Image 1 (cartoon, helix red, strand yellow):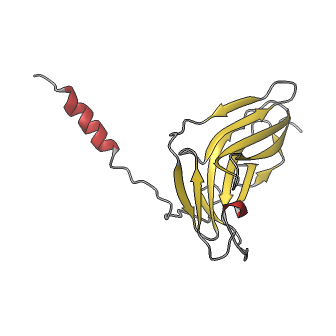
Image 2 (cartoon, rainbow, N blue to C red):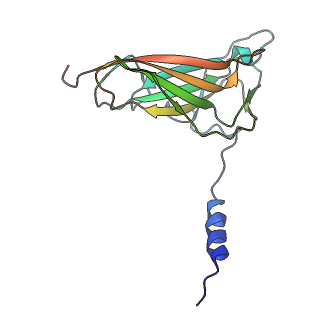
Image 3 (tube, rainbow, N blue to C red):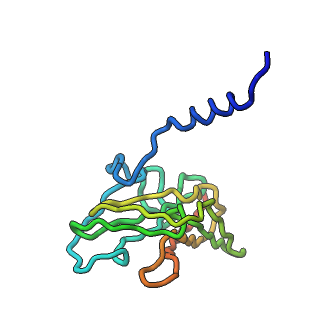
Length: 180
């Protein structure tokens, strides 16, 4: 029996295309602090635009609680968040690539910073945040860091309005010994 390679490949590709694609209008489980979408408080902002986005970077434990310090080996994840705090206004987010987060850098104690870049489609992309909508992305697991103080900086895929400068935010984390 002769196997035609295209059939196997075509079946594989066809099966891979059956997964649902999450779009910007699907807000998912907004009550879970570890889901992709959440909600934030809104306020009336005259002339609201992308410059009024709420942007945050934090390290969170397994329950979604933000951490300033963490016991070595305890669950910890670096998160990036973008929220629309404009009351009654949807905001279009324009990015220079397909990634909400393009890279992150960790500055460990007594060593040079290391930058990690995500693989992004270089084509510009656009997505919408509804009023009060928050979008989250897990950036990196930082559970196994050695004891010390760290600065982690995230570079987002969108720019500051009116400039070519990428939006960047950082979070600090102090890792303490397991037995302290």
